[in-house]
Image (cartoon, rainbow, N blue to C red; front, side, top):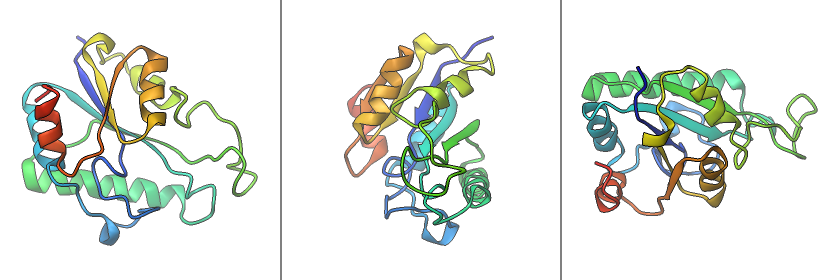
Length: 168
């Protein structure tokens, strides 16, 4: 069976974007983010986070730091609302900055759709009923490239935004 999914960009959508957030002590949930996650889960949506993390390429933090933060996010959600994100997908690359191991023009860095394609490969997602919420044009371009709706969030409260576009 296939389910509708919500794809969230991370920094600026689910959490305040202070620039290169990779530690739990620096992570602040955006207003309405947890409420949005709860609402989507109750409606039967799968939830995915897709995020460019060029801080890895730039040497600011490691891939392990990214994975630890994502595990912490799910632990927090489990404690607060009894729900979790179904999958986290991140791009550690940058096309021209950073160390050689991560400096490349990859297929996973938004605006390319590689992160979404990875999530779709699990076979559980109904693409026609799914959408993405991002805070940059690159997020929307990734959604468009895969044939999915994208919504540009630039507000203060994610739940209020989701209500305003009629998805919660």
